[in-house]
Image (cartoon, rainbow, N blue to C red; front, side):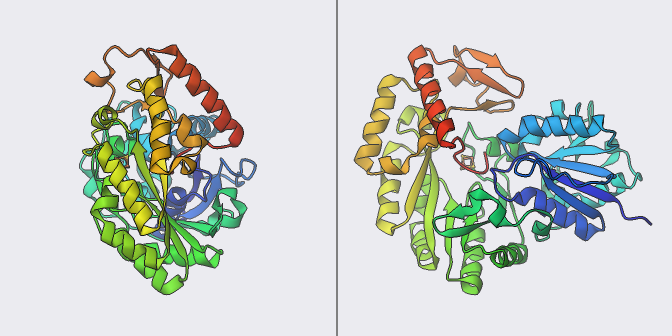
Length: 417
Ligand code: SF4
């Protein structure tokens, strides 16, 4: 039987060596495919030559939607017989993308390799591949509980991490590892919630460790857990960090968590600082109880203040992300934000990105249709809705800050949404 050939393409993954595409490539290679890979965002001129039985395009983040859709259209136009897209933002835009590609993989591809290889070999039609949505088809259900064949990401198919400027940090070369996908929270604006519906999928410890080893072999000394929420399943990622520190240390770490978890897991964070934890990214959103209520954070402004104080006491650098511009925040509130950050002593930690972050109303956002957006003017932009603030001066201020952020090359606050 001939080995099916598969090309895995990363449309955009926060300018990092793309772990989702590499993990998918690793699982398909293990399942028996001849796999090639292409980071179309960072290495646009490096499209592998040859023909492929199947092209898979990963769209894990918002910035990947337009390029991912364009790539799918280009591959189809160039005669590719089978093109599927996958990743969180592909799920959220599945109906539309399924009319451009041949279908959308509606789960982690690592659990669907057998069906995908059958499809690549021509033994199945796209409509018969488990977990794949085709144009006019019914969304596959119940798939989130399936067994996944996690394999170490096939990083060897991509340029080494020192080729990627985003891997160069003040702590040394960054290795992007992940312990879970999804999130167990339901912050109403968040694409992870919209895509995973409070579901978090743990990745095998042995696979996380094998990936950390190959990153260390590429020179990584600072490991960033790119999980949307480090404390998904509570101790899973912590165990992974312990193993990495024990085997590959001394090294340093960073992670992302909700600010209420900084309070809840204070003891664990203290323990992790001993292991080398240096930076905690946390979505503080906005110091307004109303905004926190709209986002269903389940905690108030006093909680933010306690989390900031706790991070300071524990000696970790808090990297706050904010959603500075929303329909519920006026000019007075924005002035108060500056005061709040000053008083909390974290004004310097808030960069251009956070100062211009604007609520993203992607298609599928749980906020759409909620009473919170009643009376807010929305403009359909294809894959998302733009919104207008009732006070035009707020939108004007956002435009100015957006320009500043673009000039500073800083418009993305985290990897996952
Ligand atoms: S904002 Fe963070 S904690 Fe909230 S649902 Fe999204 S990933 Fe989870």
